[in-house]
Image 1 (cartoon, helix red, strand yellow):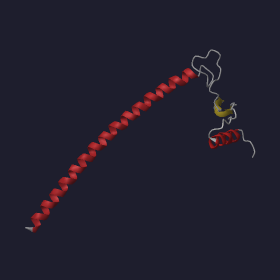
Image 2 (image 1 turned 90 degrees about the vertical axis):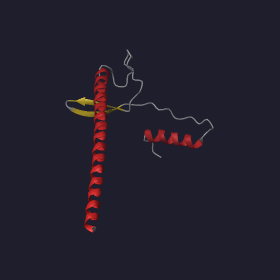
Image 3 (image 1 turned 90 degrees about the horizontal axis):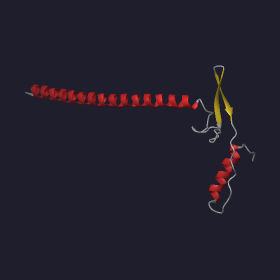
Image 4 (image 1 turned 60 degrees about the horizontal axis):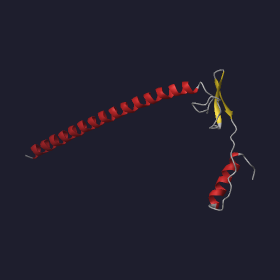
Length: 124
């Protein structure tokens, strides 16, 4: 009798394990589907970025899409310049104005002033 009880317990345990395995397989299939959707979205974004990059290649870097003069409005800090198969970083100047103190928030003003000096590598 004790032996029959053990066998029935083992059968119940195996049955429970099979159910858990099936649930895990379903979860894995759901996660795989989600992953495939994400990969497809990334491919779509990559394609759009390629199109945007090609369109941007017709204008100077940082110029707005409808700028006939090619004026740089964003003033990026640096630009990657390809040269004979080698990419080099070319620094561009950015005009930063020193923050004016208006009497409010002295700690914030000091923080902004420190950022200004750090950006320009001003010695202490």
